[in-house]
Amino acid sequence: MAPIKIGEDRFVVMLPENRIQERIKELGEQLTRDYAGRTPVFIGILNGSFLFMSDLVKNYQGDCEIDFLKLSSYGDEKISSGKVRMLKELNCEVNHRDLIIVEDIVDSGLSIKFMEELIAQHTPASMKVVSLLMKPNSLKYDVKIDYIGFNIPDKFVIGYGLDYQQKFRNLRDIYALEQDIAVDSVTLD
Image (cartoon, rainbow, N blue to C red):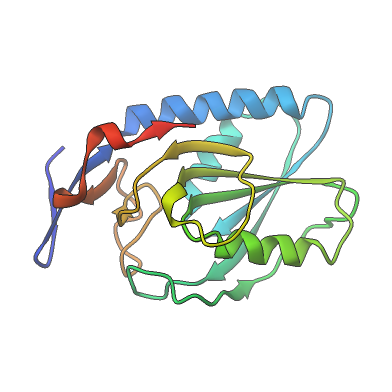
């Protein structure tokens, strides 16, 4: 797994594909147990969640529905603008349904707060959040993440759906800036 150079920045693997897939399998099994006998609606937050959501629902062994919502708070920057814009609305019925919000990464919690406020306008049976990555030291909003793949340090990451200026989403591993990486700083929740 060779480093990736972007301008002057050098990115190295923080989480290899096999570790990501093992954890997603565990999350899928947990969701299967927790939603046994129900038909949840998985709602992916585009663009970043598309790879994670695809692999997550492949590991979910029950009936489910899928929808997507597109939000933007980053644009082409490495840090959030602090404002969320909705670029694509939901197409599914959310009233009296079990909703599973699927995020690629939670850092400030702004997108999840936005989702909570959006869903609060309806009457879902339940709403839970699953995120592949969580930056616990970056949270600025009081949000609950019910299922977390990995806790990571407050560092910029790319790959496996995560982008920089809309590129590098297709990398199979998750990369961080070389000077920021500390392998032991990544933990399972």
